[in-house]
Image (cartoon, rainbow, N blue to C red; front, side, top):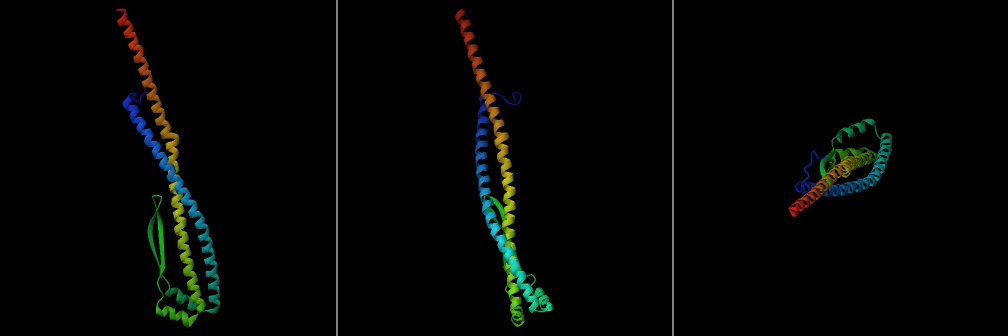
Length: 208
């Protein structure tokens, strides 16, 4: 260490400043990490409920479609499948969580045309119900995708922040503190040597 650090007061001041900055950064990163963890667990609780709702929507949509297939012709179902294709509008945006950008997905279904509505009215109310159930299912899937993607991004950021916190706590700050202690001890030794030297000079002068 003595080969890389000049033991003088200017260097000591620089090292002390770096240690203080590193400690402030460490505290801020710890707060960020703790905040991200709290947000993650809040999302996790929400995700559990949303996934349960999605599974329930899938079950209801499946039940409705099975009833519709009993009451309707396969040709009618294929015709409506074609006319409803591409009716879901998805808009990808961004939102901020603790300085982290995560996706925000907005979903909206186009209103069915008069022809589509008439086909359903004159065809089967069961078919209309199936269409509605599957629209609800798609909406649930999109919401779950948004929340779970946000959770993945939060986990990645938590791990990255934890590595930075640990790097400062167990490597950078101890290394800087060691350098600070080395310089302080070197300066103390220099001061003692100077005092001894001055005493010797004083004795020589008094002897003369």
